[in-house]
Image (cartoon, rainbow, N blue to C red):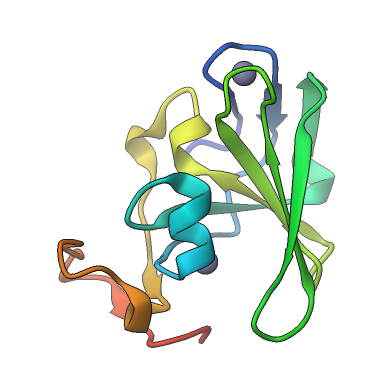
Length: 136
Ligand SMILES: [Zn+2]
Ligand SMILES: [Zn+2]
C-alpha cells in the first residue's frame, strides 16, 4: 500500500494527491453507491483530510441523505462525469476516494463488503472480505 499516491478523473481536469496510506478500504453495495458508480459497488479508499490535497479542478457536488440522516456529498467531474470522491457528513476527518480514480488502482485491497443486503445477484464478492448486511 503506497503512502504517496495520486489520482483524478478521466479527462484530467480534476487531480488529487495523498501523502499517507489510506486509513481504510472497503466495498459499499448500497443502492446510492451503485447509482453513483454505475456499477455493482463503490470501492472506497478512505484517507485522512489532513493528507489529501485537491491539486486542480472544480468538482460538481451531489448531496443525498444517508440512511442515518447525515449528508453524503459526492464529487464528480462535470466534463467527463467520473466520480472522484465522497465526503461523509458523519465524519469530517476523512475523505473517501473512488478506487477507480486512482492512477494505479491495482493496490486497492478491500477489507469489508458493506450493505450486502442490497448487493446485486450478479455481484460476486471476494470470499476473504468481512461481510456486513448494513453499516458495521
Ligand atoms: Zn474529468
Ligand atoms: Zn454506499
